[in-house]
Length: 99
Image (tube, helix red, strand yellow):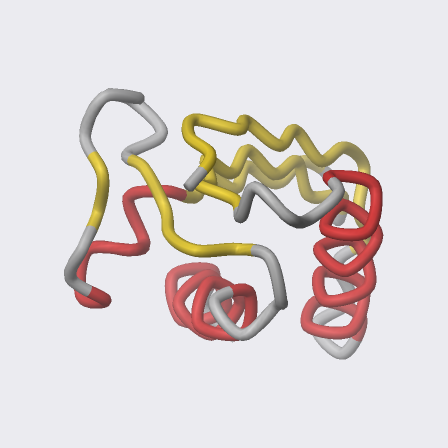
């Protein structure tokens, strides 16, 4: 499957994780992405020999813990990319806001 389609599905699934309130542009941390059509700008995926490196920029709830959110992101990435023969090499989570 195309990596762009995978990333769109992945970011859509991330939006349902409790504690994630929104996304920011990965290249411009001051730009909050309010429209779901632009959420793909919050995610950068590079692949190398069947391994994927993720960079994601999120806004979290003040009541949530990043440890739980990070575990959920890892579970979701593992689930979404396992069927496409991609293994997770690295996940970088950037917290660009707390609401």
